[in-house]
Length: 224
Image (cartoon, rainbow, N blue to C red; front, side, top):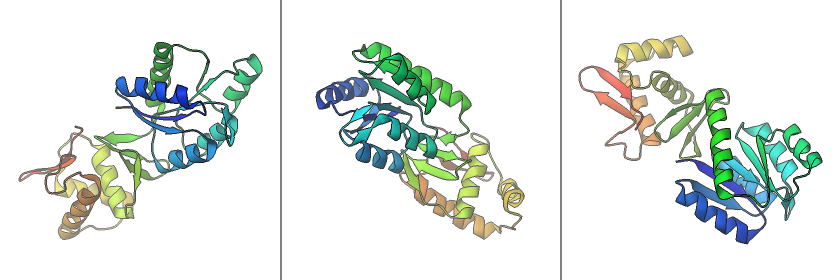
């Protein structure tokens, strides 16, 4: 389910786009201005940003530049300012696409899918179910919201997601952690950290659906 951030000062257009995007299976967050848009972007993980140039408390160019400096999330400008100079300026600060108003909703959807597809092919992100790791930034998010993990919890999750859908014995997990940390992890310590990790990433830690136990053999990270 794509997570979309719409930053648009025309509230009537925004309501229309939110209804359309949600009907197409997206989860859409909305902001009418620069300040609120950047706050949502910093607090959550999105698959695509739809951004107007003219905002109530700023402009889309500065918003796009700030976003691209923080995360490599696809940004599409949706604006009435569709002349060549504005288009070039948008691309120069990192925009992934540019669509002028008025536009067809199907064209918008096609462009969104295209930039998300391109981004996914080049993205270093590791994902399993609704949990995502950005190994470059060392960030873990669940449903777009950042989780706070200890160093060992993060590395343990990295081991599982790097070997998604593969059964890992406890010895194999300990070896993988040793290669990452050069620290010995005892059997009891491993049990404790798997329990702590489940408490943070699972909807119900008592019935795990991401890191599951393979009875008598080990564990497996399963992509639901």
